[in-house]
Amino acid sequence: MHKFKSELNKIDDVYQIKIDVPFQVKFVCCYILKINGKNVLIDAGFNSPAWRKIFLQQINSIGLNIEDIDVCIITHNHLDHIGLIQEFKRKNPNLEIVMHDITNKTLKWETDKSNTEEIEKEAIEISIKMKNYGLSEEERLRIVQFFTYWPKLRNYQIPDKIVHDDDKLLNDLEIIWTPGHSFGHICIFDAKRKYLFSGDHILSRITPHIGNFVIPDFLAAEYANYNFNNVLEQYLQSLDRIDSLNPNPRKSGILWL
Image (cartoon, rainbow, N blue to C red; front, side, top):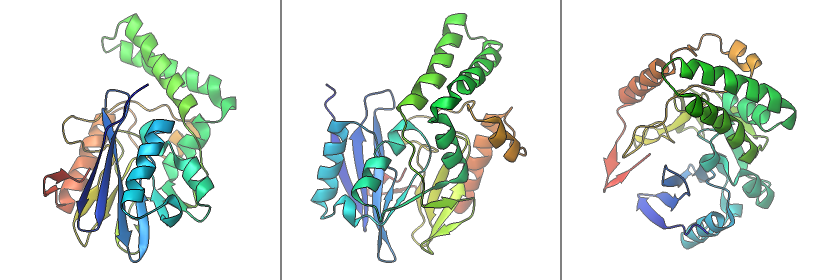
């Protein structure tokens, strides 16, 4: 069994809960802050009994329970950011789950078992394109396995609120659509304090994975202006946009990412 390590850091009234995950990214961070009297949780972590136990212990240590969280904002649809979303909602029916339109539609589609064949077909098409860039046949098959395996581990929770680019939450939090790491990825910007919560868009020690997305045809058609053939360009444009916000990148040794 994986033994998870954790840290709890604080700046002003913002708590960073940093807990190991059992794959290469090493750890994931969730954040709790108070905005206009509301307790806001950014991201829902990783779904495993040991991880959940540590997370709940950490929020208890700051005097909170899941029932005290008013809003949970999901930055993107990956396993280590949505893991406990269903359990949180079950324990706290009043919790407002917030996610981007694309994240909602992608999660709903990829967790629907009736779409398994379509997902595999999309994964094969992507892997063939990637093979043209020099991947071996063994690596191509691993790509197909990757894109078809991970959706089976994800949970879908109907969100209470759908957001889009430039929306505001609780008057003070700005939603910034930042495609690149995932198609529906968002950053959350506290403009008053210049705090940026960047999910996996910006990481402290490594460059995030930038790559192709397995998405349904209807969503690709809906976002036809997005350049799916050059995801790296979209990511770099997203970085430029974040840079223009001039966020505080570091305070007291903690990266707000």
